[in-house]
Length: 352
Ligand code: SAH
Image 1 (tube, rainbow, N blue to C red):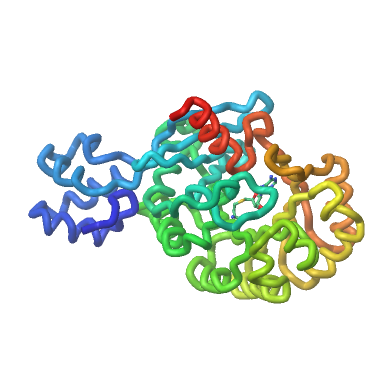
Image 2 (image 1 turned 120 degrees about the vertical axis):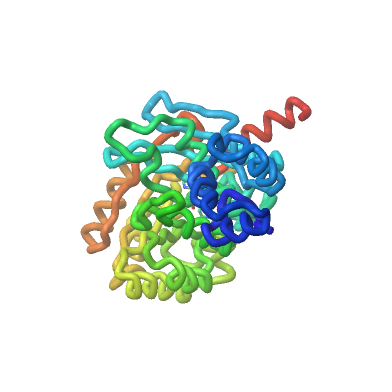
């Protein structure tokens, strides 16, 4: 029996249909619906009896229940309701090359980073591969595809709620279906996975998903500073994390992306830039800088865009490739976990 329909593979589906006494040719038809996020009761070219049989299996869905549009840019923020009522969020950002969807991999997060809203109430549960696929297909179905595009979502980043490498098997299964021709069919080069730095899993990821872009949340140039905001730094030191990043870059031939949120008075001085440049010397990498998005529950503040630009220029002078990431959707709680927390908070206020 399949765990869920939304992430089922062709062979698995063929076996299921055989078990149900259905002809094999139905597998392709059913899979084409599933890959686009349709539930059995919506499969109009499938006999009612088979639709009813399939409806008995868990689906792994994610339904859009709220949507906010930024007044400053085209960014859209979604709240998804999973089939058990849990809520996760996603953000759709428009770029010249297409649209990038940021998806969640867990309900909440247990990594405990001091600046991150997703982790404030801990982890509730992992998302299944099907639920992650359903975040994408829900958006695809919700927003009409532009005339010159094959699909609405051209790129995916796993940078929403949760730590993808703490939900490893489901993440790998998701990536497999997201890149499969009979799945979402998105190029692996257009998918990024972001981790806070679970070192052994970075080695596994290098083996299992070498074509996917790896992003590592660094946020500090030394262990002492990193431990102040990221508990994972107590489990793995930079002397372990940096070689794992280098290994990924060497083995895959792909640039590793380091994310670095600039926090006022914490990690954003010229000395910090010098130390960071020294740490990353000799690694095929790029540093994505972003002024920290202040979270009201935490008393940490971001630097100005001007300071971020200076920090980037200094890194460049020190021969480290660096850019300041565009801040999108700042008026709609664009940073991860912010909208979900608001939603849960308002439910509490309403006594739901
Ligand atoms: N757990 C993964 C992916 C989720 S977060 C990870 O840690 O990488 C995606 C990125 O947003 C991470 O780099 C995270 O550190 C960063 N982030 C979290 N809160 C932020 C905030 N308030 N401002 C700026 N970046 C933030």
